[in-house]
Length: 244
Ligand SMILES: [Zn+2]
Image 1 (spheres, helix red, strand yellow):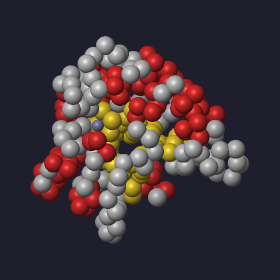
Image 2: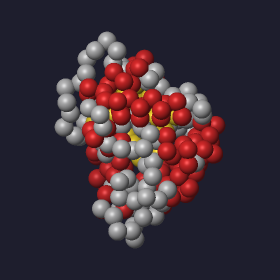
Image 3: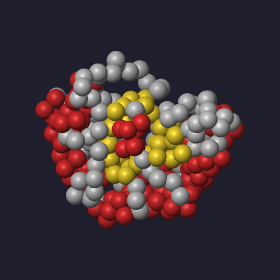
Image 4: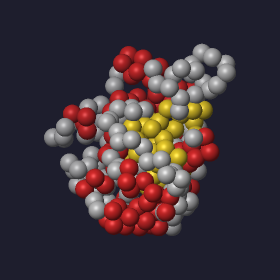
């Protein structure tokens, strides 16, 4: 981070969790909601950090008590679409339906103003649909994938760019920390509940299974502490609307 070691400005870190079925689209199980999510809530409580939980409508329908616990713990609830379908495979009408119905469903648990598309894959032509649904921050863009030119209309939500993909947070600290040190503020990091379930023995692509379970939890704790030691301020993604 450019501001590490300088007294002037503390780096802002947005920590988020994409709440969905296990390693989509490869698995049809929900162990992350059952086993991983409570571990994350306990970790964030121990480390006193706020997080944003981008949740699919389907996850909220299947596990309402888990989502209620997220809100109860003071975290932000955001939308991760309805079904975790890739928005690049949808018509504008389908995208409108996914965005509006997921927001409506999630709002039965609490206020929802932030959005992240599944697979960080969101056509810029659909961006105005977010404002229409009352979503004021879009966190679907990333620093590590090819991006379309950003939509610039007056009805654009604030855009928050994801800094690194989730599996980077599971790398050994000797690789991870120098990587983090190169990021610029605001830093946007995300994980998934299923990463905190031991999937090492499953037949999945490597980035879905390596160092999952306890190792992932320890790595996330160590990541939070590394940023905290470097002066980071942890914020909810919704706060980016006033920062952007
Ligand atoms: Zn996802």
